[in-house]
Image: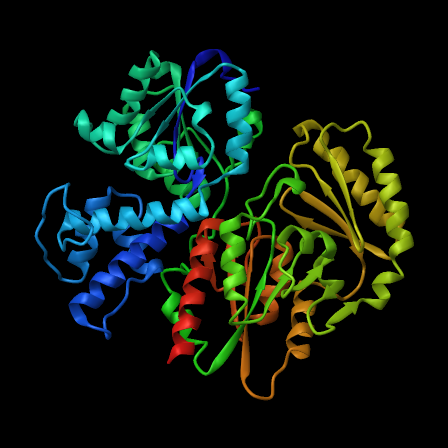
Length: 518
């Protein structure tokens, strides 16, 4: 499975950001707690906690009570320290921290902890291969989250905030919690791998002398992780199935962060109503090895459902329209499949590109030939959509990738009505027509034009195919790229992953809700 199979006996994984997705729940719990506290101090004219600015700068990724202290200091507020046993209604550092924890556990109970698909897939493989596994976290809620996510059976031991306090273990970047995990697993550090998503965790792994330190760039820290000493940087854990073929991500770090600059973006909505356009794969769900496994999380689905009560939402995806519609399952959205060749929405909205239908026979022939010519290529996937063919080569061995590219190029040359398209580990054949996600977005804007209010587009996407939409709204709306691809982008802002998309959409819903009440 990897070149280092015989050099390690254990894997130590950080929890949030590597295995589980609870960032949205944590942010919401902090927001509820601090907004209530600030209102009690300043009255109804208080300035609420801004997730994109305050949460990311003062709270995210650090111990709970330190988060309370950091945010209060940013607002020039001082309250008594109190003690760990303070009740949640006490206005002390520990009381506020305990209140946040109470809210978080309530959200966890109602919404559950989501597990990264790639993490679950690798946990199953590693468990089957009898590799010792440890989960580590600075959170005192680690056991609750792991239990909620149904992952208890996979880990041989756990080192969390409660054990760290009990044994006085120093926090990251000190390696204490990783070394304690080794002790409990009965292995030496040079026999263990550390997998982290935070710079402090990477530094801790290097200081501890572990066999390999792997950074998971779910939070846009790929470059920083390498500078901090990560031996390998991946976007998802399934890339570790073949360690010799890993590709380090390049991130659009020069773009303004959409969360940190949410208030600036919101200014463009003054006296206007945003129309939200969303890609699916890589935007609402993480990129996975098998497209069928890109299932929308219940957290993301609820956010979109709630947001759709305030504004129009359209999904513009390379997926087949019916596929996107079934994956999301919200009937009041607009769905534009096959990069906009097939559009359907509420109130009879519908468009089937007429010239696109004329290319269907050519697509049928190309599909049959690709399946035949690539039959000997292991792990290649030929996915037929109504108006396109996607050839996925993410799991193809390196030496066979050129054969895949040549086969797609040959079919494009064989059929004058078809052209090639590109994406992340995807090659496409689609109608050679002047139509793309950008043209589909413009058509929808025209169809949805209102005489009573002005509308402004917001498009969030992650891939090269989304650049057409970014270009279509540049100077007229807001383009936000998720993660990065290998070409220049026309987007104006960036988010690093699906978790940050959820946070941005949550902020947008809160903004629209407050505006409606005014």
